[in-house]
Amino acid sequence: MNTKYYTLPFNTKKVMNSEVHDSCNLNQSISHYIHLVNTSSFGECAFDESFGCSLWLVDFDNLKSTNRLKDFIQESLYDALIIHERRLDAIRINVRIKQEELFGLERSNRIKKRIDIRIKGKVKRTNEDFSYTEYFYIGPLSY
Image (cartoon, rainbow, N blue to C red):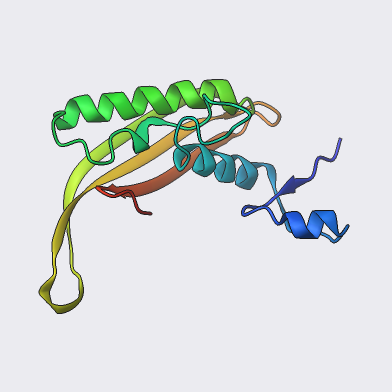
């Protein structure tokens, strides 16, 4: 069975005009979908209020300790992927949080929290190892 996977961002204009949309392989499709879950806040998708993760909830949270924040994000991502990314098995998530100094223009340096996310698992269809890495800066969220 040859399944076609589309790249993100999804170009609805091409689809509506019966044009060929850019496609990708299964691993790239899973990576795109994980990125979509990571960058969506709960309630943002009208058809499924549970779609998204907690990154948006902790964007300006300075009250939680780094370990509590890390655990909160890890659990949220795990729960979201178990529910929404059914093409993966044996999902393992590792989140690291560190402070990083960002150098701006004209001496406007800022210190932001950087969240490194590493997701590993097995692709159900092929039984191949899957690995995904992404990082975000929070306060406000950027990637």
